[in-house]
Image (cartoon, one colour):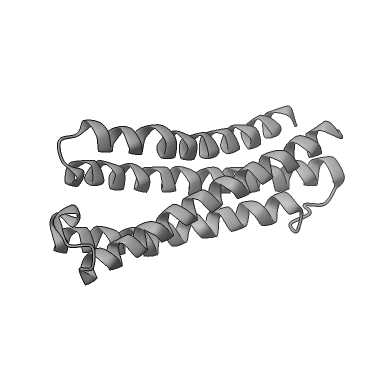
Length: 160
């Protein structure tokens, strides 16, 4: 049982910690130290894809360990528990970003060459900026929901 709780907490820590590191350390640093925004964007795009895969795997680990924990502890899985619903939401948001928004951004960046050199009213730049805003909102939402899962999980383990 303790090992299942450890895996659940580790999955949350890795996923939420990865998002925090990416958003507040890696991405801003790359855009300040690399010579072009194109290079920074290439690294950020590759890192974001890896972060999404980490999140998807961590979400599945959390769900499977949590369901098994409930089965062993309470003799029922409780698939509609708040933490499970929230983690599924995190997985869905991450998958949408990974398989819908991110590929569109990558393709558009490839077509536009240097987004920063385009006029503010260029249709390609406007489309890229909209996609970037969606990407940021999705990642922020996953982070906030993940913090909610952490709070629910802490309360759950505190009552055991």
